[in-house]
Amino acid sequence: MSFPTPVGFQSLLSRYQHIRAQTEKICTPLTPEDTVMQPMADVSPPKWHLGHTTWFFETFILLPHLPGYQVFHPQYAFLFNSYYNSMGSRIARSDRGTLSRPPLEDIYAYRRHVDEGMEKALRDKQLLQDASLNAVLELGLQHEQQHQELLVTDIKYILSCNPLLPAYLPKPEAVSSVFSGKQPQNEWCTVTAGMYTIGFQGTGFCFDNELLAHPVYVAEFQARRTLVTNAEYLSFIEAGGYAEFKYWLDEGWQLCQQQRWQAPLYWIELDNEWWHFTLHGLEKIDLEAPVTHISFYEALAYANWSGHRLLTEFEWEALAQLHAHPVEEGNFLESGMYQPVTATQAEKTQPVAQLLGTTWEWTYSGYFPYPGFETAPGAIGEYNGKFMVNQMVLRGGSCATPQSHIRPTYRNFFPADKRWQFTGIRLAKR
Image (tube, rainbow, N blue to C red; front, side, top):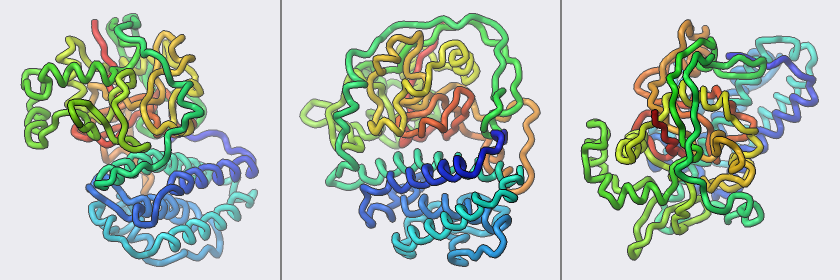
């Protein structure tokens, strides 16, 4: 990992408290019953997220660095370890929904206990001089922000499985006007051929999978200014895109048939009209908004049908180097929209819109290490490296990503069949 220069304890403590509070704010609208649900293995119960992010700070900071710290419960390490083999055994990922106990109130007590310990650690000036502690602390904060996005997408899937289709929150009308108006379409931006330096080069934080910046030749191409809309994707559906194998990779086509995909996840056809489940409840499809909740296979099939293609991750980063707009202009977690919407008025003035925020963009690039990548020693080395196979890279962040968590070099990754994240399409052509 790459980490920023340590800051004073007051600002560090404030940032820690803000991030921890944001996680609990996400869970505030939930009932205790909501927090224990796990309708599929990819989704973790919100209660587990609350415990796991707390376990991270207890395990990697408080136990090794704070003298006299006492663990809150000796069995919580088994319950809330995610995939760190070097940290001992753990409950199977698919069994996290069996945790009716400990009760939710105990998990919040666990968070308070660890937060008190962290406040002591962050007020210890001697501890703050420890570069390794600062590095792990920053990783813990970034890790919790990752789980904030997962919380939003997991909550959406959990509520969608309820026959009542309950809303998580009402739509924030006060900000919806910022994301309104007709979406620019069929406009393209040219990226000239040349050598582009790919990878993180700054002095702040990044994950290890972004490190080792290296030159990559990118041939000239054109990228769509905006993301593919629901209206455009609906045309693909109505043209029989889900019934014509020639647009699909064979593996995706077989999955499409087995799972009987006919539209993006959460789309429902009622009385010849398309609706979709959102975190604000069941709503009619906004035809101007970007399509989302599609797999890589669907994104590629649409691109093939439209006569275009997907960007590679290197092309995406070259595009971002030329035209990345300020993150403040994007639709992130902080907007409260929790849904892809049309480009903001500020974004519409940029050469490329919706590049950061709104939806993660599938790229036609497998998730592999950059040249020279080495897995870090110890448990922290299990964070990214061991997942570099059978996954596709996504770029740009989404409406569920915390604004301060994203950057143009950020490499997200998921298997090609996953649909429950806010995933979308940007097209490219020569």
